[in-house]
View 1 (cartoon, one colour):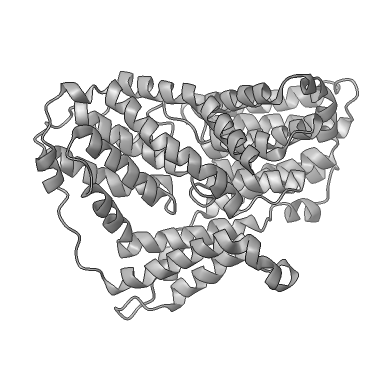
View 2: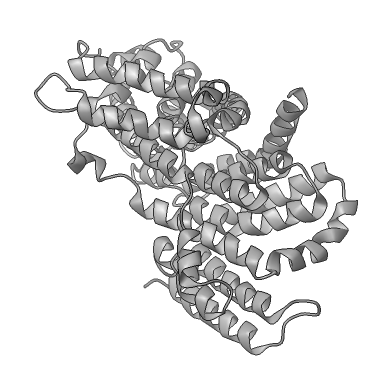
Length: 468
């Protein structure tokens, strides 16, 4: 175990024990104080990854009944949310797209239409990566696109290990774009679903696929040219020799469409179209049966039924079993923690303590919280950041009476807005392993994007909300 995890393991236990020994603050019930101690323990372990994130997520099931807040049966039920099925169905669709190779076809189609300049090709790489990442996980997207980027670098005659110019920009841009794609749709990143699940359950909202799309896609559309501009300047693309024609030749041409690809495309289009149309067609289905989750599962079942043209279905269980089961359990842990915070009275106490913040302009308050979230997520995983921050944020929203969209949506996205650290995200770590990234440049480019993150996220979401 490395020093950070060892420090987190010991530090979390010490903080937990000290809080249990000390008397609760004025006005807080002992039961709420015990849950506050548990929250501190989980936050430290999540942020330092002292234990696997999913293992830490099991703590409420163990401690909440012992503390007398809820029974074991009741806390077990809190680990469930309908949005879990959205995560699962989205994962099955992404796994199918990867299996049939549709992702590579999309990438080549976009890249072959790039302008024949270094900046044009960089923009095309970032655009292609972002497009694929709207339905495929960010790490998988990076795995898809980085080999294509390395082939282009080699064909352009750039030496191995070069970190300046186009080589550094395109590798870093691929990693950044994989992260940016996670803001676009509710299924593009597990963090999105975790945050929305916590918001919906704690505040009684009903944020769905279309709601997220309405706010997420403008963020993506602005971030893609913004990241291109930042990377082009940090890597000084205009000052390095580069042969775009040789690079484009390395992309090659896509093979003829396979039967499997032809059969996946209509399913993918249909599921996204149904997600978007859900608010309008749901009233025609009984008992609220048409949700984002039921749509995802319905089309997922088709993937196991439709043949791919080779005598097997588009997706079999061996492939589907690669779905993010650990994330689903982690998500449940966040929901259980939020329930314990509410039932113990801790949420009510936090509401009283945070009430003075109502005098602060909400826009400024949102900027501060989003900036702090971006800072935290640079040093902790985005899933851990969302799981730790969202339960406290919901108490703040309740105390201030703020619109949940205006406060929670920017913070939900900020949990994934981390660009600086080489190992801060899966895509960054993969890009770093290529040897084409210099630490000072990723720190500089990431820092610039981090600085822009808070005003961008809050500004765009508030602007879209005002339009309606």
